[in-house]
Length: 73
Image 1 (cartoon, helix red, strand yellow):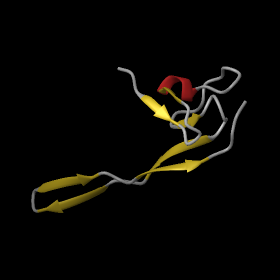
Image 2 (tube, rainbow, N blue to C red):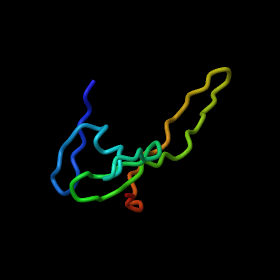
Image 3 (cartoon, helix red, strand yellow):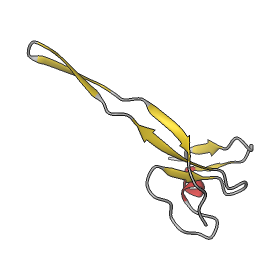
Image 4 (cartoon, one colour):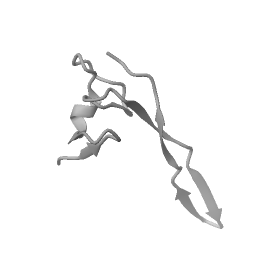
């Protein structure tokens, strides 16, 4: 399955291209870097919540945020 990412600079490429540094190293899980402009960001997820009603429980997913991070070589 091919997943494309578009950076705010306009560059669009496959997810795997955004998971490597400009010199070819792998980024940590959840970190991404544009191969064209070098803009870097990471995916941050807040904790999920569990709502209980009697014997039943529902899991509410946490929010997913994209935050800027340091560029890597």
